[in-house]
Structures are given as structure tokens and as C-alpha cells.
Length: 142
Figure (cartoon, rainbow, N blue to C red):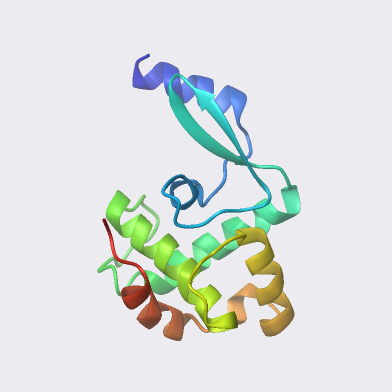
């Protein structure tokens, strides 16, 4: 299947793609709200819960904004290269988990966000400067 046909099949099939798809597929984290589906020999991850999806998109955007200086990006409106996206997502989620319970294993992204909202009040109030520093030590690329 060519890339154009794949993109068309993907957009027709999945309207609620998980913003942490790469992280979940790399086994860097898991999520209780995530489902997996195969399209043209590729595995995709989608979200089963609209509320969780909105929170995850917000967190991904906030991580991107807060990691932009560390990643050497002035403009964050363009997609990041895969390695930088993985560093931001895996490192950011692990750092958030570590800031909550001193564990770096992210077993449930949706649950992590619920705990974060209970502790910090909103996703904008998360300790991003600490998370950016921790991400470097908690995420090592393969």
C-alpha cells in the first residue's frame, strides 16, 4: 500500500488517534484508554475516551511548548523529528510519573493525568522545568 492510500485509510478509519501513539507503540508507556488496530500491516493506537483524548492532546502540546528550548526549536508548529518527539513524550511522561511517586514506569497515561490534575489542579501547573531536567536522565534512546 502506498503512503497516500495509507493516509486516506487512516483518516477514514481513525478520527481519535492517540497523541502518545509513538510512546505506546515503543512500549515506553501504556494507557487504559488506548486501543490498537492494524491498517495495512501497520499498528495504530486510538483513544477510547473523548475526555481523556482532550487531556492528552493538551499535555502533548504543553510538553512540546516546554521542551522547545531543550530540543533547539524556536517554532513548535511543525512536526518534530521522531527522536525528538520520543525524547519529549517518553521523557516527559516518565518525568511526570517520577514527580508524582518516584517511579519512572508509566503504566497508565490516562491515570497519570488524573493524578496530576488532582495534585496540581491543571495541566498548565505541572512542574515543567523539573520535568525537562528529569527527562534527560529518565529517557535513554535505544
